[in-house]
Image (cartoon, rainbow, N blue to C red; front, side, top):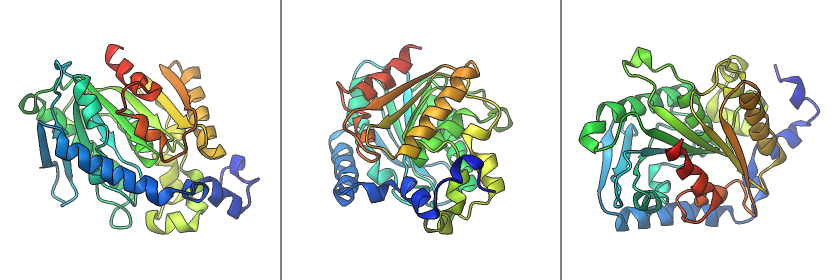
Length: 288
């Protein structure tokens, strides 16, 4: 059932809080920027290998770039958002040049979207992608023990779930050394009631319990950066702050960042942009 902390919202209010697309006037422009900036990076950045298959489905691929500056051995894996039902890796490569110049390899994941998939199925696909990267680290030229993750919105949820994964059944040690979760979803409970979203996801309350980082007993065994935009919705900000508090009180390594003058959709564009605080926090994970 809907958790008590959400019951003071009317259905319309809850939908407004969890549909930030309704709060941004220039959403078409911002989504076009994702695609345009990503296409430009794919065209301009050297050392790219595209559509590496990690599974059997056409969407089970990632793009990879080696660094152009002295190699740190680190790999940043970016997991895109879109409420598990929109966008792709082709809209999600704007950060490549900035990471290359920082001496970091980059992998941008694709996965099968809902309703052709489930959120649990997307989690499994992302886990398989991480395993494939680990097992091909030597060939691709990065250190399999130095994997960092970044994700935005639903991608922030997926990045966090990756850091909560027990990797031993996959035959590998935990490779995750840090994550950056930007405007992430850490509690899926309210999504179950929002029909315009959940008609594609088909989440049950049991699914939400099993797939919510905030409701999973363990915490990431790595440093976590939790960031959000100043103009994110109140609920996205509260979820980020609540999960950060949970990690802090549980002994986890967590830092938070509110990015000024940014909303739910443009805050992530700071990742990969030299000189921004979000980019610096992301690069700081390479020193921890």
